[in-house]
Length: 153
Image (cartoon, rainbow, N blue to C red; front, side):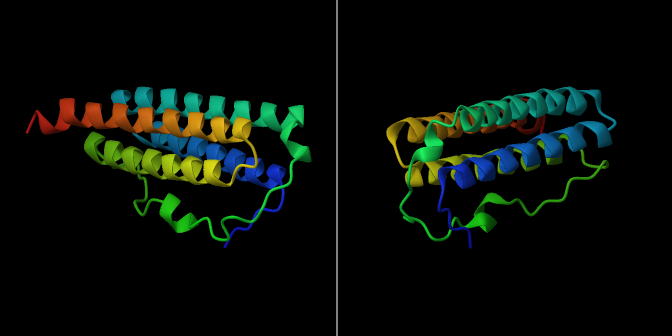
């Protein structure tokens, strides 16, 4: 169970989640032999790194650090943000896309929930913006899956 008592703890949690996403997509890119998979997942690793950079910048500015947060959510339900598929170098493109869709959906849920416990509107906006970005990623993977997997079958 995660209980946050400071804004920095919330931001640190989000930064760690973004780093996990960077590592996830970097690993998918490096362990697959398909150039298409490598290209797509290298792009997503860079986008997730951009999210992390944005969060680090917000933390360094220190604007939110002085805010108090009320323990509105005692349990962030971390298990809901995890995917149960283990990436491997032998995944085909459809498996990699499914895994990526699940990962982006989990990230969307995370940022949506973090926006609910944000102590002010600016921080809520930050997490809502990140949730929108993650939902866009998921949509792109869904469109890719529809175009290259479903239509080919």
